[in-house]
Image (spheres, rainbow over the protein chains, first blue to last red):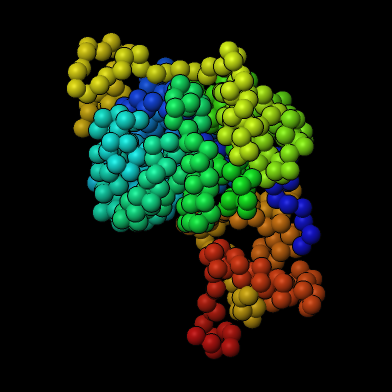
Length: 389
Length: 98
């Protein structure tokens, strides 16, 4: 079986994505400091139920096995469960990310009974203190209640999804213990400087020593811990981490945002990475197959400043979005390059203008729970409209 | 290595998607994704359901006997990840094995 390496095949793209991220709404009850999509308020242009179902029909026709649904907080969409059922009835599996706010005992039982649905509860600290500092007061308790409900409903192997930061890298063992306690699987992903993440990345991204610690921990735990392939830039430390170890943007993954815009990846909500819209005449399939941007991403990449580096084959220059939103050139090292070249560039970058995301739906009023000022109608919590539970 | 003299099927929750390099294989239950990079192996996998044994599925795809161990191992890997399941022989058929 002398077939070429899979990653070489994937670099030229596939007729349909392997999986894709679909953010159903920009509305969110939380206001996490590092939100990759700068979510908060619903956008009035969001896809209607009928439009969302048309997208699912396309995914079924393209044999996209599953979608990663997120937001915003996807479960606050009134038609969330309807769309979930529609997708699974059409053999499009769903894995959705939630902060847990709607994972009641009843919802948990429903999820546990459906083989085609998987759930990821977002938690960015193994303790309330670390988590709530980033995700807001009460968010730890909400997430843990969701974990308890899922476990009690007999749901197996759901995910606890953690964005790795400087403050929670020391808690990797505690996260694993938490996942084990609830019969869940741990999923660790990389903090990107995307959305509001750009504002906190400098202070929150793991230090060089922590990156090494994370890499060693991931090697030690192998495939029992998921990473969504997000740490392939660390493979330059030694052996490759499990996964495809390539940037899949526009090649095997993409993002559909709540208003139907199709971006190369969930971490690149910016005009530069906008391929089209599912409302365009050719629909999602047309964008995936005919977008000039995607064709470019699927063409052979040169490595630029990294091409002479002996580790280029391992890390492929790292994450495009991480470079873009830290103001680094796309054909140079990742800001977290294990050899430190990114750090040097960051230090030298001076007053370069950092690109801002294309969409910002942050609620303008940050509402600490202790002191609640009057909130304008458009900035209200998305939960209030339907009557918070 | 699977038992080539038994009947095998794709797991009912497994879907195949053709690709230029072969196929993607996805299990909706375990949520595992695999890749079939060998077109003949893909043909064998597709033929399993209509063949009384894996050996016959291989023969129908002109797999030479010398390559049977390699194909058996590849099918074994798919069986270990629950992508393939053994099919119970129909009543009155087969060799009487349980």
